[in-house]
Image (cartoon, rainbow, N blue to C red; front, top):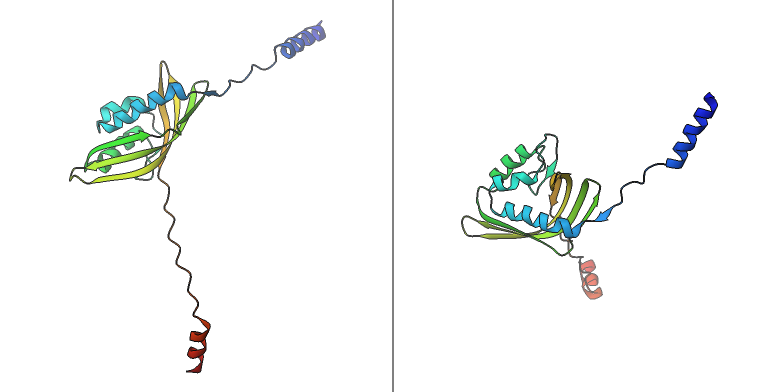
Length: 176
C-alpha cells in the first residue's frame, strides 16, 4: 500500500510539473509615463516630491552622476541637496531609446537623456546621460529599488603622429 501511495504522489507531481516561470514583458507603454513623472519631480528640486518614487530601506544602492554612490534614499537625499545647492533648475529629457521590461513584480528600465541644469548664476550646463532603473511593484505603483545614472567618459585626445622630415632635410641634419 505504501508503494502505491508513493507512486500516486509521484504521478501527481509529474502531471502537475513545475509552474511556468513568469514571462518577460515589454512594459514601455506603462513605465515611460511613470518615469517621466519621476524625472519631472526631480525637475522641481523638491525632494518631498521625488521621495515617493524610491525605496526607503537601507542597503539600496543608488548611483548618480556625483558622488559615486548612495547607500540609501536618506543618503541620496542628503547628497542631492549638497550637489544641487547652486542649481536654479534641472530638466531631464528622456530620449526615444527608452525601453522597459517586467517579469512579475520586477521591472527594469534603460534610456539615455539630455540633462540640462541652470545654475543660480544664470549659466547653463548640458550633458548626455544614461540611466538604468530597477523597479518593484508596490500595490498599484512602481518603486525604484536601484538606480544607476552616468555619463560616458570622454576619451582622451590621441596625440598627433610625428611628421617625418623630407629626405632632403634628413640628409642635411646628418652632415652637421
